Image (cartoon, rainbow, N blue to C red; front, side, top):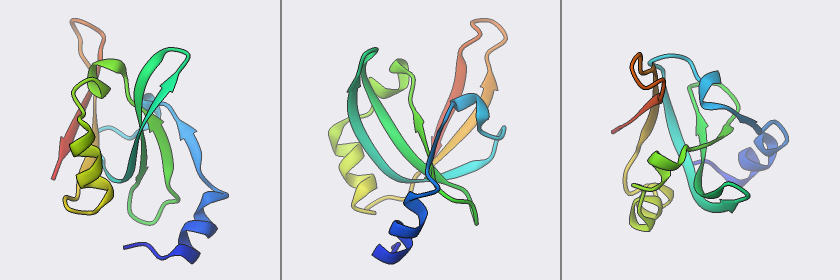
Length: 103
């Protein structure tokens, strides 16, 4: 688990990125998940990190945030499960961004 000093050091480097800025098929550890309401509606904000990099925050598209339950968020945030976000690219038919969650 990350100690408080490291969290304070990293918070200055947090940036919000788009799903499209994620590397294809790279596994990003989900450090924290938070349900928010934006001007576009309800969403889930994920704080992610790959090995060695400073954490980044990425908003989930509605179709993904709609399936995430509060229990899922609590389990991830309590480190009961260790989840990874994976960007799989763009669907050639629907042009939707493809995401996966892996253990």
